[in-house]
Length: 255
Image 1 (spheres, helix red, strand yellow):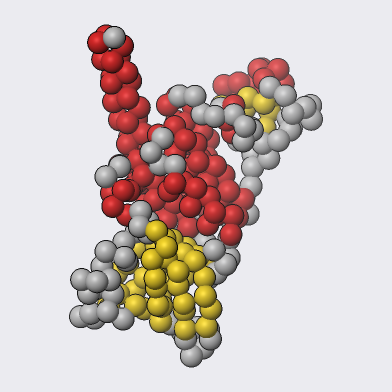
Image 2 (image 1 turned 180 degrees about the vertical axis):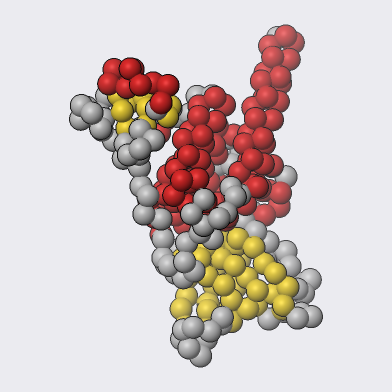
């Protein structure tokens, strides 16, 4: 058995004295693991860091085996990600979500979205927005997709402001007004890919929305807790935006 693919490293763990077991999110073969001989060597350790993008060849005698991986670098992102808490926690959160899926199940859209997240982690609001979209995609892949395109009550695609906690469907501002206290708030950027997240409050509201459905459909049924990286990511986003606001205020005073 053999295949050739591109992957993003999610993590590694030691195996014996010199080898490592590598966990990748690959484009065509989903989340996949394999043994890298000599993976703990000085030459290989800088390559086998979470966030790096690699070209990988996997070989095994039969498909069910762990198999051997041969990896070559495509891009080194790990050093850049480690310096940015938003990026580091974002990668850890995405990896935790991907582990909810069966290993070796192909999910090309999730691979592409993860790659985009790692490319845009320098912009805090965009990183927050992309992680929310990643969570919405994860719910879809797990069989609990949300319908955010049209109002569940009127069928309109305008002024979608809420989501029903019962059905997971969008609700317009007017239709939802009488039950606003029972509905989940939905920030505008979740409705359209052409709208950008505007504030920390919008990011938090969006994560509160996805958290409700993850808790109901995924975490509680599996007797799991939300990933610790989730709180870490939101705290890092809040700190980053707060520091940016302080820096902007100080710059304005100097000018």
